[in-house]
Length: 311
Image 1: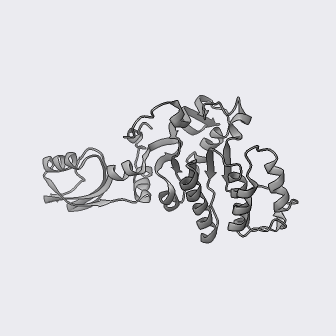
Image 2: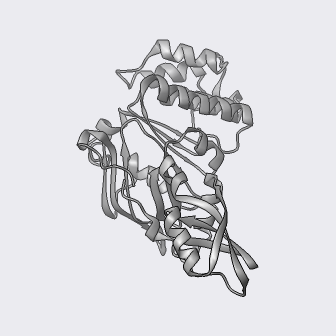
Image 3: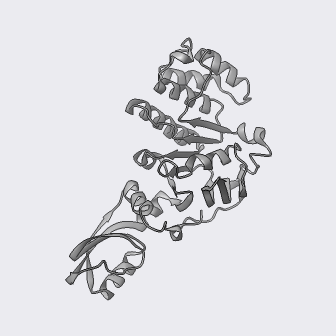
């Protein structure tokens, strides 16, 4: 379980019991999440899980119907200037004025930010092989993504919010975006909130994970904690079993007869004791990828709200 934050300054994003409903659809169902300063928080879930709706509340684009959202100690709806001036944002849409040249767009955007760094812009433009003279309307989707990342990073925001930033992009552009995120973290210690359905990408850069499914928070905590909690185990019995054994915290049994396999959440000694009581023996344990853990939980019925961790 993640250790509690030391004081209010350690928590840059504080979301409590957030509810958002669109008609009969509950997009967010009592979500609570705390993002510590300097963390890379990966928010994962299938399309429609509530990731974008959650980030719109962080940006102050949606007002909570119930619950609270506090960003850097401020309400993003009541104080949008105070919050947005300290955030960088990149979405998968990459919406920009087509008639502008890249250089004009950079100069225009920079005029709104006192902390805008022209030297950093030049570094990023060169790194991404962009031409300041190119018109936005001529850019490929990948080039638009690179320009969008320059705009998000150039004022050196305290929090970088990325909503499916590499969705639909080729592997080279995805690599550039991830490299820029890693550089931002390692060199400047910024906080990054990174939503994606591409779990392998999140796994590469995130040190904290939040799993959303149908608007509910299934899990939140550090990556290391999650890896330690979840693993695939195979239990062998002395006699054939017609139905899966009843073991606490086991998810998604498969197999039959003498051997059954499941994903297990908990301590190894607890599982071994439970398996022994059921007449079985653990014969194999395997560490899981983020993708395997998410699929197991998102596919469980009902959603495992009980695996929520306090952040």
